[in-house]
Amino acid sequence: FFSRAICRRRAPRQLGNSSQLPHIDHHIFKPMLGLSLYALAADPPPFHPVSIPHSGLVDGSSSTALISALASSGVVAIKGIPGYAALRSDILAATPACAATPAAAAHTF
Image (cartoon, rainbow, N blue to C red; front, side):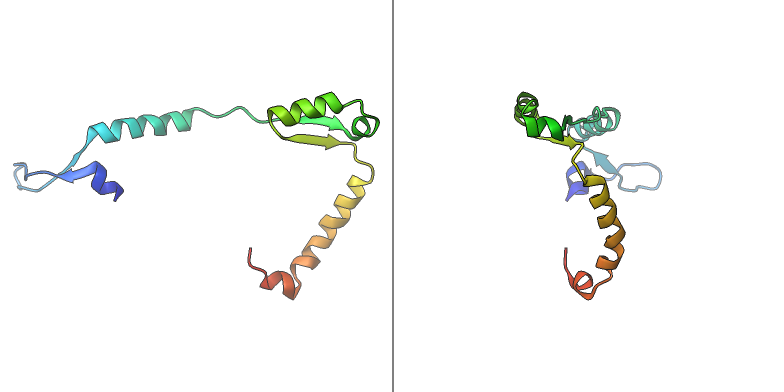
């Protein structure tokens, strides 16, 4: 479908061997080429979510920052969650054993 839209066969050209060459439909190809080059050249800036300390959520001092971040991007990183590092380590250590269970192997993602 794509190649048919861009390359259409025209009447045979006389090139010594009378072969039929595809004609590129430039009104379709040029904008697509421009968009492709733009997409390759335009790297978006990295996204860094607003980081709010857990203690600020507990005592309410970060309420304004939380509401502002959720209103603008909808993404917030919470830092300093008590016990998070140990819990993360335990979960990462247990992941291979969990993935090897028959229930996990039979699960369709």
